[in-house]
Length: 132
Ligand code: AMP
Ligand code: ZN
Image (cartoon, rainbow, N blue to C red; front, side, top):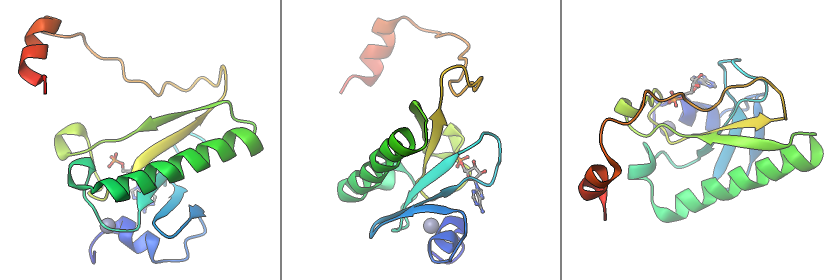
């Protein structure tokens, strides 16, 4: 897609690409907020998880798994956090599906899990609203 920054990265020779296969690309996040912050994206332009077909999503998650295994088997990491914002209200700032992958080590001091303010409703109330 013409105006999409991630589509541009996918079709470029960015030196920050760490992985590529027929369907996906992974590259370093420009934020430099945490060492090894990686974004895994489908080559096909899809906006977010709601917009993504199952095959594409499977390819993205397969790449996430391969990269995670590589980080742990070859790069001395011990775990990963996976984060995704789908939709503007969820905080998605780039409208091309991406999984944030944060490599982790014990006692690395990274706080990758949001501190929520506490639920407003009882579980039963929410259950009634969202049960499928
Ligand atoms: P989100 O807010 O979940 O949509 O995440 C978008 C991410 O894309 C942010 O972490 C940005 O730092 C990152 N980002 C934006 N532009 C670029 C770029 N040109 N290269 C690499 N990462 C980028
Ligand atoms: Zn795109």
